[in-house]
Length: 174
Image (cartoon, rainbow, N blue to C red; front, side, top):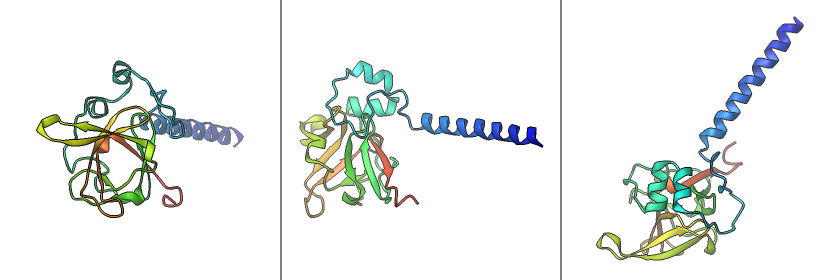
């Protein structure tokens, strides 16, 4: 009986350890030493280094200004309460309370969590005049901002889902 209990305990420990490792590796950040939800220090990492670290779709959007197809990203219609972070570096960007349904096909927010969490740059690519939104910590492309959002800011931060990570509020997830 004692050996069965010991064997069961060892099996439970092995299963728990394997599950914990699976959760760690499925987060996508275990090989990214720059990812942090608390560090706000500006990063100076080369695109060559990011290319080694980031998944191809994230690299293409974040570092090469690609855009995901509308209505395909995992967050365009997400209603859960929580916080959105830069998928490249973990910088806090938006709270779900600032998210709204814009029907444009990408997640849309009316304000970032902090004024200095994003940077704005003129973007005249594709024959359009737009304002690009980049992460203030790592410089990665997040999307664009438009003047057709709801009150109180009347802004629409139109972001690529692939450039965002979402963490649900602890109280909302229980």
